[in-house]
Image (cartoon, rainbow, N blue to C red; front, top):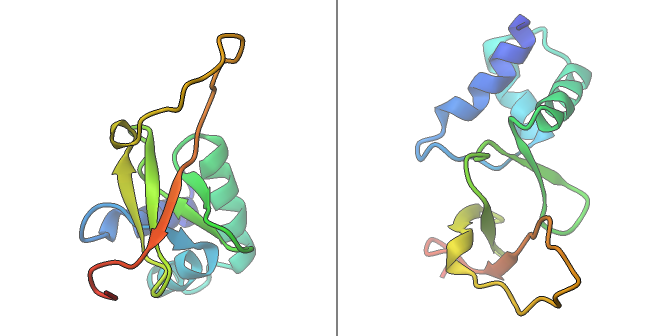
Length: 121
């Protein structure tokens, strides 16, 4: 593991609740604080590698910005605050699956709920 990859992975370890949903630019900003010479391209490439390796999830909540989620332990959905754009995990068990036709196999599902978090209400 390179120093750059170690720093990028450690960015996700410092979350107060253990789960951050950071953009690549936010990861770069935090990584530069630990390793000033790290480039934006290295951050983008490493995030892609971590997603490919199953160590991060790439989360699209609408718009053009991808957020990266280190919670890969279980299937979950997301709550997105429409005011501050904070993202919170929701266990998949809290969202029942719709009735699925017999001839269709669900391989994955992404549910995003939008609203206001308690800080913005």
